[in-house]
Length: 401
Image (cartoon, rainbow, N blue to C red; front, side):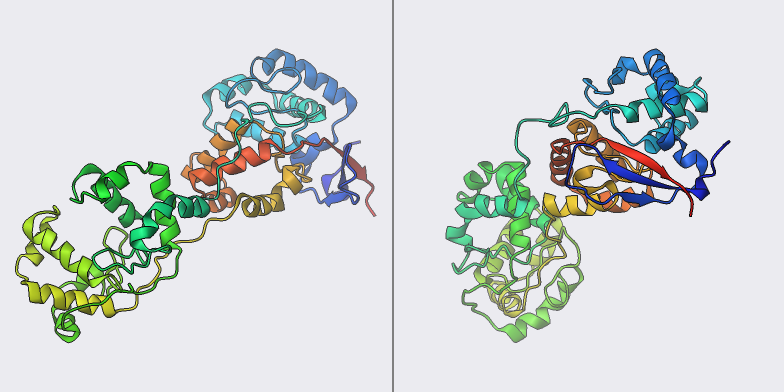
Protein backbone atom coordinates (compact mmCIF):
# COMPACT_ATOMS: atom_id res chain seq x y z
CA UNK A 1 0.00 0.00 0.00
CA UNK A 2 1.33 3.45 -0.89
CA UNK A 3 2.08 5.55 2.19
CA UNK A 4 0.91 9.17 2.26
CA UNK A 5 3.76 11.58 3.01
CA UNK A 6 1.32 13.69 5.02
CA UNK A 7 0.78 10.85 7.49
CA UNK A 8 4.39 10.37 8.55
CA UNK A 9 7.44 12.08 9.93
CA UNK A 10 11.03 11.36 9.04
CA UNK A 11 13.62 11.22 11.80
CA UNK A 12 17.27 11.55 10.82
CA UNK A 13 20.23 10.05 12.65
CA UNK A 14 23.90 10.67 11.90
CA UNK A 15 25.99 7.53 11.62
CA UNK A 16 29.32 7.25 13.41
CA UNK A 17 28.94 10.41 15.50
CA UNK A 18 28.05 11.03 19.12
CA UNK A 19 27.91 14.76 18.52
CA UNK A 20 24.24 14.57 17.53
CA UNK A 21 22.36 12.93 20.38
CA UNK A 22 18.88 14.10 19.39
CA UNK A 23 17.32 13.06 16.08
CA UNK A 24 15.99 15.84 13.85
CA UNK A 25 12.41 15.49 12.64
CA UNK A 26 11.17 16.72 9.28
CA UNK A 27 7.59 17.16 8.10
CA UNK A 28 7.34 16.03 4.48
CA UNK A 29 5.63 18.30 1.98
CA UNK A 30 4.55 15.66 -0.55
CA UNK A 31 5.22 12.07 -1.46
CA UNK A 32 7.18 13.10 -4.57
CA UNK A 33 9.38 15.44 -2.50
CA UNK A 34 10.53 12.79 -0.07
CA UNK A 35 10.01 9.35 -1.56
CA UNK A 36 13.74 8.97 -2.26
CA UNK A 37 14.41 9.38 1.46
CA UNK A 38 12.50 6.22 2.31
CA UNK A 39 13.47 4.08 -0.67
CA UNK A 40 13.59 0.33 -0.19
CA UNK A 41 16.62 -1.94 -0.47
CA UNK A 42 15.33 -3.04 -3.88
CA UNK A 43 15.09 0.59 -4.99
CA UNK A 44 18.72 1.10 -4.00
CA UNK A 45 19.80 -2.04 -5.87
CA UNK A 46 17.92 -0.89 -8.97
CA UNK A 47 19.49 2.54 -8.59
CA UNK A 48 22.95 1.03 -8.71
CA UNK A 49 22.17 -0.41 -12.13
CA UNK A 50 20.97 3.01 -13.32
CA UNK A 51 24.18 4.57 -12.00
CA UNK A 52 26.31 1.96 -13.78
CA UNK A 53 24.71 2.74 -17.12
CA UNK A 54 24.33 6.52 -16.86
CA UNK A 55 26.39 8.15 -14.08
CA UNK A 56 29.72 6.42 -13.54
CA UNK A 57 31.55 8.31 -16.28
CA UNK A 58 31.54 11.50 -14.22
CA UNK A 59 30.53 10.59 -10.67
CA UNK A 60 31.96 7.08 -10.36
CA UNK A 61 30.11 4.07 -9.04
CA UNK A 62 31.20 4.98 -5.53
CA UNK A 63 29.89 8.53 -5.92
CA UNK A 64 33.31 10.10 -5.26
CA UNK A 65 34.20 12.47 -8.07
CA UNK A 66 37.77 12.80 -9.31
CA UNK A 67 36.93 15.39 -11.99
CA UNK A 68 37.27 19.12 -11.45
CA UNK A 69 33.92 20.84 -10.95
CA UNK A 70 31.98 17.57 -10.71
CA UNK A 71 30.32 17.06 -7.30
CA UNK A 72 30.51 14.06 -5.02
CA UNK A 73 27.17 12.27 -4.77
CA UNK A 74 28.00 9.63 -2.15
CA UNK A 75 26.02 10.22 1.02
CA UNK A 76 24.23 13.26 -0.42
CA UNK A 77 20.65 13.78 0.73
CA UNK A 78 18.33 11.59 -1.34
CA UNK A 79 15.38 13.93 -1.80
CA UNK A 80 17.73 16.75 -2.83
CA UNK A 81 19.41 14.55 -5.46
CA UNK A 82 16.03 13.48 -6.84
CA UNK A 83 14.82 17.08 -7.07
CA UNK A 84 17.99 18.27 -8.83
CA UNK A 85 17.95 15.40 -11.31
CA UNK A 86 14.39 16.33 -12.23
CA UNK A 87 15.49 19.94 -12.63
CA UNK A 88 18.29 18.89 -14.98
CA UNK A 89 15.82 16.83 -17.03
CA UNK A 90 13.43 19.80 -17.19
CA UNK A 91 16.28 22.03 -18.41
CA UNK A 92 16.04 24.56 -15.59
CA UNK A 93 19.61 24.05 -14.40
CA UNK A 94 21.27 25.01 -17.68
CA UNK A 95 23.84 22.20 -17.77
CA UNK A 96 23.89 20.57 -21.20
CA UNK A 97 25.98 17.56 -20.17
CA UNK A 98 23.69 16.70 -17.26
CA UNK A 99 20.60 17.43 -19.31
CA UNK A 100 21.75 14.99 -21.97
CA UNK A 101 22.62 12.34 -19.36
CA UNK A 102 19.14 12.30 -17.80
CA UNK A 103 17.07 13.26 -20.83
CA UNK A 104 15.79 9.75 -21.53
CA UNK A 105 15.67 8.46 -17.95
CA UNK A 106 12.27 7.97 -16.35
CA UNK A 107 11.43 9.64 -13.07
CA UNK A 108 11.51 6.17 -11.48
CA UNK A 109 15.13 5.76 -12.65
CA UNK A 110 16.05 9.20 -11.31
CA UNK A 111 14.45 8.38 -7.98
CA UNK A 112 16.31 5.08 -7.68
CA UNK A 113 19.68 6.53 -8.75
CA UNK A 114 19.22 9.22 -6.08
CA UNK A 115 18.46 6.60 -3.45
CA UNK A 116 21.53 4.58 -4.47
CA UNK A 117 24.01 7.44 -4.25
CA UNK A 118 22.47 8.67 -1.00
CA UNK A 119 22.99 5.20 0.49
CA UNK A 120 26.77 5.24 -0.05
CA UNK A 121 29.39 6.22 2.49
CA UNK A 122 30.44 9.83 1.91
CA UNK A 123 34.00 10.88 1.26
CA UNK A 124 36.22 10.50 4.31
CA UNK A 125 38.41 13.33 5.53
CA UNK A 126 38.83 16.45 3.41
CA UNK A 127 36.81 16.36 0.23
CA UNK A 128 38.48 15.31 -3.00
CA UNK A 129 39.65 18.48 -4.70
CA UNK A 130 40.23 20.35 -1.43
CA UNK A 131 43.42 22.36 -1.66
CA UNK A 132 46.19 22.06 0.88
CA UNK A 133 46.64 25.84 1.12
CA UNK A 134 44.95 27.50 4.11
CA UNK A 135 41.93 29.76 3.67
CA UNK A 136 42.63 33.36 2.76
CA UNK A 137 43.27 35.65 5.74
CA UNK A 138 40.77 38.15 7.08
CA UNK A 139 40.90 41.09 4.60
CA UNK A 140 40.75 43.77 7.31
CA UNK A 141 43.71 42.30 9.20
CA UNK A 142 45.52 41.77 5.91
CA UNK A 143 44.83 45.41 5.05
CA UNK A 144 46.16 46.60 8.37
CA UNK A 145 49.36 44.62 7.86
CA UNK A 146 49.79 45.86 4.28
CA UNK A 147 49.13 49.46 5.38
CA UNK A 148 52.00 49.40 7.89
CA UNK A 149 54.25 51.01 5.28
CA UNK A 150 51.78 53.88 4.89
CA UNK A 151 51.57 54.78 8.57
CA UNK A 152 54.73 56.91 8.64
CA UNK A 153 53.09 59.54 6.42
CA UNK A 154 49.35 58.95 6.63
CA UNK A 155 49.04 57.92 10.28
CA UNK A 156 48.49 54.46 11.72
CA UNK A 157 44.71 54.63 11.19
CA UNK A 158 44.85 56.86 8.12
CA UNK A 159 44.43 60.19 9.95
CA UNK A 160 47.19 62.50 8.78
CA UNK A 161 49.29 64.47 11.24
CA UNK A 162 51.75 65.59 8.55
CA UNK A 163 50.83 68.78 6.63
CA UNK A 164 50.69 68.14 2.90
CA UNK A 165 49.88 64.45 3.36
CA UNK A 166 46.26 63.36 2.86
CA UNK A 167 44.17 61.52 5.40
CA UNK A 168 42.92 58.20 4.03
CA UNK A 169 39.89 57.76 6.29
CA UNK A 170 36.43 58.79 5.15
CA UNK A 171 37.14 57.76 1.55
CA UNK A 172 35.25 55.14 -0.40
CA UNK A 173 37.50 52.13 -1.18
CA UNK A 174 36.75 52.49 -4.91
CA UNK A 175 38.05 56.04 -4.99
CA UNK A 176 41.12 55.25 -2.91
CA UNK A 177 41.92 52.23 -5.09
CA UNK A 178 41.60 54.37 -8.24
CA UNK A 179 43.93 56.98 -6.73
CA UNK A 180 46.56 54.33 -5.92
CA UNK A 181 46.25 52.96 -9.45
CA UNK A 182 46.77 56.48 -10.84
CA UNK A 183 49.97 56.90 -8.80
CA UNK A 184 51.13 53.48 -9.94
CA UNK A 185 50.47 54.28 -13.59
CA UNK A 186 51.90 57.78 -13.45
CA UNK A 187 48.61 59.61 -14.09
CA UNK A 188 49.18 61.25 -10.73
CA UNK A 189 52.66 62.64 -10.24
CA UNK A 190 54.52 61.85 -7.02
CA UNK A 191 58.10 60.67 -6.70
CA UNK A 192 57.23 59.19 -3.30
CA UNK A 193 53.90 57.55 -4.10
CA UNK A 194 54.78 56.00 -7.46
CA UNK A 195 57.34 53.46 -6.14
CA UNK A 196 55.25 52.86 -3.04
CA UNK A 197 52.14 52.09 -5.11
CA UNK A 198 54.11 49.98 -7.58
CA UNK A 199 55.07 47.58 -4.80
CA UNK A 200 51.47 46.95 -3.73
CA UNK A 201 49.53 44.08 -5.34
CA UNK A 202 45.92 44.49 -6.46
CA UNK A 203 44.82 42.21 -3.62
CA UNK A 204 46.68 44.35 -1.09
CA UNK A 205 45.12 47.50 -2.57
CA UNK A 206 41.67 46.03 -1.94
CA UNK A 207 42.57 45.10 1.63
CA UNK A 208 44.25 48.43 2.40
CA UNK A 209 41.35 50.50 1.10
CA UNK A 210 38.88 48.38 3.07
CA UNK A 211 40.95 48.77 6.24
CA UNK A 212 41.00 52.58 5.96
CA UNK A 213 37.29 52.73 5.09
CA UNK A 214 36.48 50.96 8.36
CA UNK A 215 38.57 53.24 10.57
CA UNK A 216 36.94 56.02 12.59
CA UNK A 217 36.54 59.12 10.42
CA UNK A 218 38.46 61.95 12.14
CA UNK A 219 39.68 65.32 10.90
CA UNK A 220 43.34 65.56 9.92
CA UNK A 221 45.50 66.66 12.84
CA UNK A 222 47.13 69.47 10.82
CA UNK A 223 46.79 73.28 10.69
CA UNK A 224 44.76 75.07 8.04
CA UNK A 225 45.63 78.54 6.72
CA UNK A 226 42.85 80.49 5.04
CA UNK A 227 39.42 81.99 5.70
CA UNK A 228 36.82 79.28 6.41
CA UNK A 229 33.88 81.63 5.92
CA UNK A 230 35.12 82.73 2.51
CA UNK A 231 35.83 79.12 1.64
CA UNK A 232 32.27 78.08 2.55
CA UNK A 233 30.83 80.60 0.09
CA UNK A 234 33.17 79.43 -2.67
CA UNK A 235 32.38 75.77 -1.94
CA UNK A 236 28.83 76.13 -3.26
CA UNK A 237 30.17 75.27 -6.72
CA UNK A 238 31.70 72.05 -5.37
CA UNK A 239 28.66 70.71 -3.50
CA UNK A 240 27.13 69.04 -6.53
CA UNK A 241 29.93 66.46 -6.64
CA UNK A 242 31.55 66.54 -3.19
CA UNK A 243 28.42 67.09 -1.07
CA UNK A 244 27.24 70.15 0.82
CA UNK A 245 29.20 69.10 3.90
CA UNK A 246 32.10 67.69 1.93
CA UNK A 247 30.79 64.13 2.09
CA UNK A 248 30.46 62.60 -1.36
CA UNK A 249 27.46 60.49 -2.29
CA UNK A 250 29.25 58.65 -5.12
CA UNK A 251 32.15 56.19 -4.76
CA UNK A 252 34.17 57.70 -7.61
CA UNK A 253 34.18 61.21 -6.10
CA UNK A 254 36.28 61.84 -2.98
CA UNK A 255 34.87 63.22 0.22
CA UNK A 256 36.74 66.37 1.28
CA UNK A 257 35.45 66.83 4.83
CA UNK A 258 38.26 66.77 7.42
CA UNK A 259 40.98 66.44 4.78
CA UNK A 260 44.42 67.99 5.31
CA UNK A 261 44.22 71.58 4.06
CA UNK A 262 47.72 71.77 2.59
CA UNK A 263 47.09 68.60 0.59
CA UNK A 264 43.82 70.04 -0.77
CA UNK A 265 45.66 73.18 -1.91
CA UNK A 266 48.31 71.07 -3.64
CA UNK A 267 45.64 68.93 -5.33
CA UNK A 268 43.80 72.00 -6.64
CA UNK A 269 47.10 73.36 -7.94
CA UNK A 270 47.81 70.07 -9.71
CA UNK A 271 44.41 70.13 -11.43
CA UNK A 272 44.99 73.75 -12.45
CA UNK A 273 48.43 73.18 -13.99
CA UNK A 274 47.63 69.78 -15.52
CA UNK A 275 49.57 67.65 -13.03
CA UNK A 276 46.32 65.73 -12.53
CA UNK A 277 44.35 64.95 -15.66
CA UNK A 278 40.68 65.69 -15.01
CA UNK A 279 38.98 68.14 -17.38
CA UNK A 280 36.11 68.93 -15.01
CA UNK A 281 38.41 69.75 -12.13
CA UNK A 282 40.82 71.61 -14.37
CA UNK A 283 38.03 73.92 -15.50
CA UNK A 284 36.92 74.61 -11.93
CA UNK A 285 40.43 75.06 -10.53
CA UNK A 286 41.66 77.31 -13.34
CA UNK A 287 39.70 80.29 -11.95
CA UNK A 288 41.08 79.94 -8.41
CA UNK A 289 44.04 81.94 -7.14
CA UNK A 290 46.20 80.83 -4.21
CA UNK A 291 44.09 82.66 -1.62
CA UNK A 292 40.85 81.10 -2.90
CA UNK A 293 42.41 77.64 -2.80
CA UNK A 294 43.52 78.15 0.81
CA UNK A 295 40.06 79.37 1.79
CA UNK A 296 38.36 76.35 0.23
CA UNK A 297 40.86 74.01 1.86
CA UNK A 298 40.38 75.64 5.28
CA UNK A 299 36.61 75.25 5.01
CA UNK A 300 36.69 71.58 4.03
CA UNK A 301 39.36 70.78 6.63
CA UNK A 302 37.04 72.14 9.34
CA UNK A 303 34.17 69.80 8.46
CA UNK A 304 33.50 66.49 10.19
CA UNK A 305 34.28 63.53 7.92
CA UNK A 306 32.00 60.49 7.75
CA UNK A 307 32.86 56.86 7.26
CA UNK A 308 31.76 55.50 3.86
CA UNK A 309 28.92 53.02 3.67
CA UNK A 310 31.10 49.93 3.76
CA UNK A 311 30.30 46.84 5.81
CA UNK A 312 32.89 44.94 7.76
CA UNK A 313 33.23 41.55 6.07
CA UNK A 314 32.02 38.57 8.04
CA UNK A 315 34.63 36.06 9.04
CA UNK A 316 34.37 32.59 7.51
CA UNK A 317 33.10 31.21 10.83
CA UNK A 318 30.32 33.82 10.85
CA UNK A 319 29.31 33.00 7.29
CA UNK A 320 29.39 29.28 8.06
CA UNK A 321 27.10 29.82 11.05
CA UNK A 322 24.54 31.34 8.69
CA UNK A 323 24.92 28.56 6.13
CA UNK A 324 24.58 25.90 8.82
CA UNK A 325 21.06 27.12 9.64
CA UNK A 326 19.84 25.37 6.49
CA UNK A 327 22.66 22.98 5.63
CA UNK A 328 23.21 21.54 9.09
CA UNK A 329 26.03 21.74 11.61
CA UNK A 330 29.35 21.82 9.75
CA UNK A 331 27.41 21.40 6.51
CA UNK A 332 25.80 18.06 7.39
CA UNK A 333 22.20 18.64 6.41
CA UNK A 334 19.45 16.97 8.43
CA UNK A 335 16.77 17.86 5.89
CA UNK A 336 16.66 15.34 3.03
CA UNK A 337 15.57 18.16 0.70
CA UNK A 338 18.63 20.33 1.39
CA UNK A 339 22.15 19.38 0.25
CA UNK A 340 24.97 18.47 2.58
CA UNK A 341 28.09 20.57 2.01
CA UNK A 342 30.59 18.76 4.22
CA UNK A 343 33.37 17.04 2.32
CA UNK A 344 32.17 18.31 -1.05
CA UNK A 345 34.71 19.22 -3.73
CA UNK A 346 36.11 22.69 -3.10
CA UNK A 347 36.11 23.69 -6.77
CA UNK A 348 32.48 22.60 -7.13
CA UNK A 349 31.37 24.63 -4.10
CA UNK A 350 33.18 27.68 -5.49
CA UNK A 351 31.45 27.32 -8.84
CA UNK A 352 28.01 26.88 -7.28
CA UNK A 353 28.34 29.93 -5.03
CA UNK A 354 29.52 32.00 -7.97
CA UNK A 355 26.54 30.78 -10.01
CA UNK A 356 24.09 31.78 -7.27
CA UNK A 357 25.77 35.17 -6.87
CA UNK A 358 25.52 35.96 -10.58
CA UNK A 359 21.99 34.58 -10.92
CA UNK A 360 23.05 31.81 -13.30
CA UNK A 361 21.67 29.36 -10.79
CA UNK A 362 18.26 30.31 -9.39
CA UNK A 363 17.17 30.26 -5.75
CA UNK A 364 15.64 33.23 -3.90
CA UNK A 365 17.14 32.11 -0.59
CA UNK A 366 20.60 31.48 -2.01
CA UNK A 367 20.53 34.67 -4.09
CA UNK A 368 19.90 36.69 -0.95
CA UNK A 369 22.73 34.93 0.88
CA UNK A 370 25.29 35.01 -1.92
CA UNK A 371 24.61 38.50 -3.28
CA UNK A 372 26.96 40.14 -0.77
CA UNK A 373 29.66 37.47 -0.86
CA UNK A 374 33.07 38.59 -2.08
CA UNK A 375 35.38 36.33 -4.08
CA UNK A 376 37.40 35.84 -0.89
CA UNK A 377 34.25 34.88 1.05
CA UNK A 378 33.38 32.29 -1.59
CA UNK A 379 36.89 30.83 -1.62
CA UNK A 380 36.99 30.65 2.17
CA UNK A 381 33.55 29.04 2.50
CA UNK A 382 34.33 26.48 -0.19
CA UNK A 383 37.61 25.62 1.53
CA UNK A 384 35.90 25.43 4.94
CA UNK A 385 33.11 23.06 3.92
CA UNK A 386 35.34 20.87 1.77
CA UNK A 387 37.37 20.14 4.92
CA UNK A 388 34.44 19.23 7.17
CA UNK A 389 33.81 15.56 7.91
CA UNK A 390 30.88 14.31 5.83
CA UNK A 391 28.41 12.15 7.72
CA UNK A 392 25.94 9.66 6.30
CA UNK A 393 22.37 9.71 7.56
CA UNK A 394 19.56 7.26 8.01
CA UNK A 395 15.96 8.44 7.75
CA UNK A 396 13.55 6.47 9.90
CA UNK A 397 9.84 6.50 9.12
CA UNK A 398 7.78 7.16 12.22
CA UNK A 399 4.17 6.09 12.40
CA UNK A 400 1.49 8.77 12.43
CA UNK A 401 0.00 9.56 15.84
